Length: 349
Image (cartoon, rainbow, N blue to C red; front, side, top):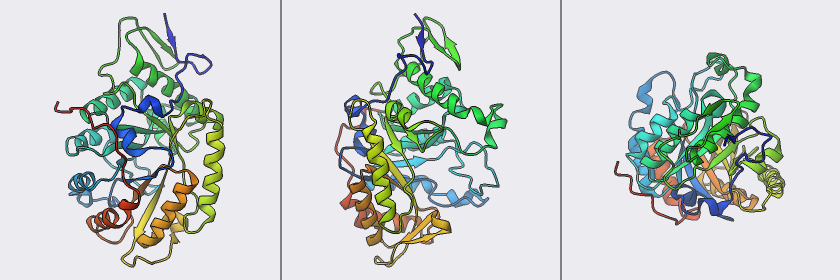
């Protein structure tokens, strides 16, 4: 029997509520109703054409793990577009997460976000399940349809097809992880009876967190995402968190089973020495300059709005990365601690 992944089929796997991830160490470290945890976005320093700016980053990730942050996030930018002026993570996200898995013990490993239309679901599923096994169940996948049009022709894919390919890729990916060897039919490929993807995830599932709209309707995201990562809007005053609260409330009202699905957001910070420095938007609001007390107030507003995890990027900060990480760990993280949950599986591969 064929396991159809077409979007019109009732057999398409849908997003799962919290009980499906009760044994998933990465998910449980990051998410719980009413709680907000903190993660760090990589790279920790902006790439300006010299790879030496990233030297020592993995040691700092080891320190982030030791200090108790909930997650580290890596971006997925296959090709740098000079028009964007941002190379993203530089390293391939899956290769780099495998490297970081070997250097960390507890921190969740998150993609922010894997561009699903640009890769075949078999390759995505193989890489994801491998990292999840190697890390003992710590992989959480932010996924997106892609926002850099220049990457699509390089893959031989029409940019206008990205929304449909995203839906098909998500469905195929989930079927591959769950299949015991039955044939799978998808617009993106067909597996034969007796073929299956190995390894399987450490706990049997990998959370898929849709980023932004990804070309989908709010109803599709409510039904098919295991969580939602959306951008915060203005973060220098109360108006942004208030609008974010409305957006999260409307999204959660559309979740078919009414169960908990986490919401995530992120901010690029220039964290200054003065703890009372007011929240000030820079670069048209793309970067927030603030002292730690303003950041704590913002995080509390986000928590009240329904945000469950905040990924903080410091690549545009002027202070040394290690100094900022330790200030966040000592002064901010105690207000938003990582959550207890199952320990990572034995990953001594």
